[in-house]
Length: 625
Image 1 (cartoon, rainbow, N blue to C red):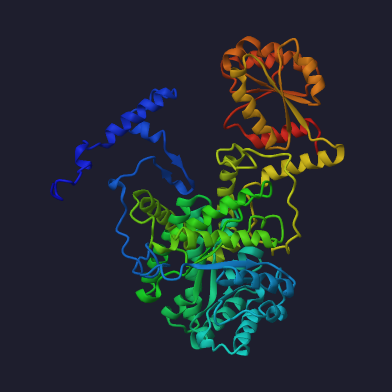
Image 2: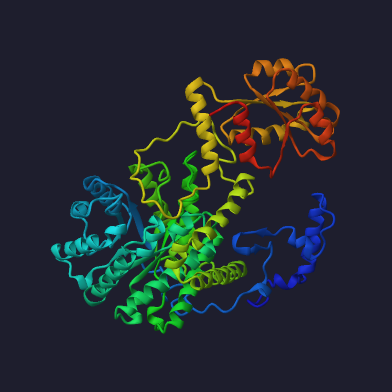
């Protein structure tokens, strides 16, 4: 048998499938789900998912959906990476963040992280961090020629930068060999504080600092384009990108106006973006960011060698939850993976307890080991642009880039980033986006595991030392769990005052198979508001007695639609007679709404209902403060 005869042309053994055939298969699945009118393209559209920024994710992508050519790694438009080798040589920079006001404690944490896997230090200095005068103690024992230092000093960026540069000289490290980021970000500070009284002076100071870096320390970047304030105010991915572009352009204007060459000015910027648990959106966002900045650089006359965007990705604080914080480990793992796959030069995985206060040693260890596993065991950095060539990722990158460019143009049309912040234009756009997302969160169209879905009321709280208060006065800081956290806090207060949580009776009736699914649904729903479910099987005769002995003050009818038609009215009436302050029915009311309401049903709960409103009004009825 020859080598040629042993080949198995498997693909040739099967007929080619086309999109129409696949759509017909989808039609069959939809018919089994009760969707009978969707055919052809409409059947495919029924499986699509809408994202923010007007982006619609389809269930199937083919070569026909490919975007424009994306070039090669290390070459404009840098979609596939900022350098030809990517992170294959040494991996990305594992950058841990430190928020401590005590220099000694900060130093202990910094050294522990550097000794166990991190490769650079991100240190909060000044307001909310170590004092500028304590920077030397915080970095004591750090080999400054090996570990890059990144400062986050807010309004104190100039004295903090001067102190760090002094420490390089004092430790014998030539400034020409230093690698650091000084973190000057006057526009980011304006976004955080809303105070523009010193903006002009800060911009001039940042430009002078950049000029010194160009002249004395070419490995040090003076400015950070921090997009986190816009993400943390509820902005979408495209809005985060658009705001970062507008900020970067403003800094280029400032630096070149101060006399820097446009290439040198471009090299003075590092961009910081949020990485979320939406892995494909994060991958596309980082790829789109490099493409967009390459276009800005091209228009500004920057050489290809200086136009690659330097990226620092940080796992999102918006997605971090205060309840069931252990799940944050899973979120940050996916986000860290996405940042690496997306081509970030540096990645920060926030500890799982970051939303609760100052992280402890265990949480920091898990955070850095998350990246160690991705780099050393998964070998994630050994492939350049692993998502490249995926029709879905390429199309998503293209659509996101176009949406972000449109928002960038809106900001420029409003007079630039500073003007958009001063006028409230940017704040209004971000607030509108967050309001739409809040609606999805309230209706659990965007579920939060451990909070709006599968909450665990009996879990012991995780206590941490309070973190220094961040600067405020500007754009708000939001979290996905905000609305549910307020509900759970009301329940906690009731528990502390009375010894019990507010309770709801889940009254299942009819055959077990008829009510099990809706009992589980109702239990999940009410626990999201801190309301403890009491599950019982009842009928019209026993309902009143069961309710009286349950300790509950409200009740939910749980059964199938068919059984509702036969028994719901009688059971509802019995519960009302027993003193139920409110009776819910699990399911949509349909044509029998008036009949059910006449029997005592006050409200209906179902998939897609406004869970926050339902739970808030339930606590109100039970007079839970």
